[in-house]
Structures are given as structure tokens and as C-alpha cells.
Amino acid sequence: MLSKFHKASDKARRFLENKATLFVRNLTMTKNTSKVQALYDLCNATFTPSPSGASPPSSQALQNLCSLLDTFGPADVGLKEELSDDDRGHGIFGLNQLNRVARWAQPITFLDVYECDSFTMCIFCFPTSAIIPLHDHPEMTVFSKVLYGSMHVKAYDWVEPAQVQERKGPSSFPVRLAKLSVDKVLTAPCGTTVLYPKSGGNLHCFTALTPCAVLDILSPPYKEEAGRKCSYYHDYPYSTFSAGNGSFVRNGKEEDYAWLEQIETPDDLYMRQGKYAGPAIQF
Image (cartoon, rainbow, N blue to C red; front, side, top):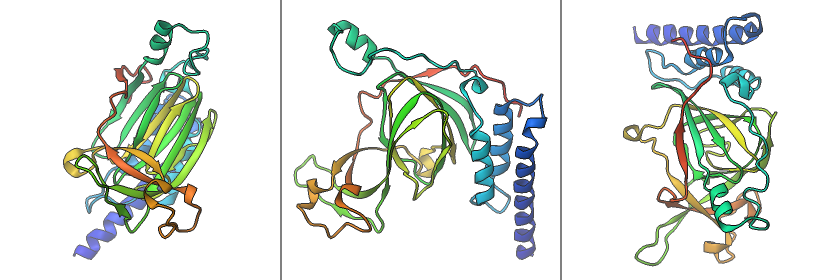
């Protein structure tokens, strides 16, 4: 009986994935459907758990989602591309102290598009030089699409099995070894990036090089009681705690590795809640 139930559940999941594939192919033919609605429908088909429990989406389902996200621009989510904001974040030359503080104090704006138990759709709008510090996405898959502007992404994955170094001192915390996965600049228009629970740069940091905006899909969402709490980290060069010992290095050079220390939420993470003004989603 249980075997028949699992077969039926797998059949239902394959049906949803095939339906999602057809949906992407026919998207351009549906003039009355906004891209945001299409994204919601596809996420709902891709990430909604089956009766037998949540199953990882197939590679085809993930590709379908990337293909749709690749078509997004700022206008599709009700945004207008921000123009260059001059020399913000490039130093003090030509700026008095008050002007510099006013420019650098502008917050990142967070727009909540949609959230349920299976996935979150949200947008981050950055002024130049704004940073989302190094943080993790425990047990999550995250899709990121730069809608406009340019940002630097630096990302790590944990080295497995875990390599931990204890530190001396009453206020010291242990550090854990991670390997650099991504260190590059993304400039719109560009393809969607994907990180996975244990690969692709699950711990990452965003730095805005120009005004920019990023559309994120997170599945499953952050949920502290389920063990999916966002933690922040500081990265140290490999040599800081290795004393020249290369025994931890695997398949790479020492500069490809760093020691990460978990820290409290940074005081300079300046973020405000904005209002999503794009097309409405019909549930």
C-alpha cells in the first residue's frame, strides 16, 4: 500500500514538473499573465511539498525557474532603474563630512513580494557601496537575479568534514574552514545564479558597486524553529589560524580557503522595509 502511495506521489510530482516546463514554453503566448504571476505559479508547482513530504526539485525544474528569472528586468517587478549616484562610497575627496555620512547612510530597501511555507520571493534594492555581510542559507536553495546595476559577490562553502580551530581567550569563538566558491562581479543583464545547501556558495556577501537590485527566490524560507536561522560571519585568511600548515587544503591553493567566525548581526547592516509596487499575485 505504501509503495503504491509513493508511486502516486512521484507521478504527481512528475506531472507538476512537466506542467511547469510547458508553462515556461508558453509564457510568451499568455499576454494577460504578468511575469511575477508566472514566477509565483512556477515556484508553487516546483516547491510545494507532495503528500509524501518535500522532495528536491529535479534539474529540469530548476532550469525552468532559471530560464524564467533570466527574462526579468526592473519594470517586471514595478521598479525603475536607479541612475548612478555619483561618487558615493568612493572616498572623501570632494565631499564634506556631513555630505559623506548622508550618502553612506542610505539603507538597503527590502521588498517582500510573497512568502509561504515552501518559498519566499523578495527584492533587495542597494545604494552604491551598501553591503549585505557574509551570511548563510541553512538547508536552502537560493536563486538570485540582478535586475539592474552591478554588484560584487563573494561566496564560500563549508569544507567537509568540518575543520574547526579553537581559539584562545574568554571572548573567542572557534573558526571553521570554508572554501571560496564565487568571487566575481555581476552586472545586469546577466543570468540567474543558484546556490544550494552544500554547494554553489551557500555563505555569501553582496557589495553594491552601483545602485542595483536583486530578485531572490529562497526555498524553503528562513524559519528559526525549523533550524533555518540566518547567521553572520567574518572571514579570515587561511594563514591567520593555520600557521603555514597546508594540511587542510584540498584541491586548491591556500588563497582559495578562509576561516569563518560566526558573529552577531552587524551593527552597520542598515536595512528598511519597502512596499512592493509591482503586479499583484493571484493565489
